[in-house]
Length: 220
Image (cartoon, rainbow, N blue to C red; front, side):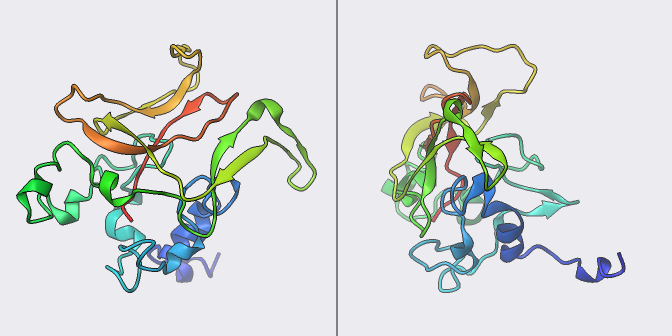
């Protein structure tokens, strides 16, 4: 225990990536889309914010911490540690383009719709399909693993959302959607809500698990 206090430090990009996020879902980029070890110092064309030749920011530049609580939301869209929501406007403002025709859209169109035309653009593909109904024993992991499908350079789906999300809490009554599936997580809102914005969505399919719909969470 004597060495523990000496090793305490603020999280670096490497801490966030290597300790937690790179292998979420079982493989680099598999669950977290473009998040793999390339993000320690990505090329500017992949991530303009983290790149040393771009804004040279860190994970904590946006995901600010307070009392060991981290701002931000995972792609399971559960509630955040902190009440504060992260938005591009936190840094860029509500009228970032200095062009009336472009800035007139920011109230109804999320920045990511224009600035992330594709995802899974890094060296590792992302998971697009997992079928728990066909899980088999894997001697390497000593677990039952479902077959998974991966792909790269994908075009997101788009929908209107209000920034809030549905998350099924285990033990709650099951209410199936019209398609017969249980929605485990998903964004809320529609075009009729004044506060809703057109937003991007990655939508992996997981038969046997219910439906998981994941909003895009970063701008690259």
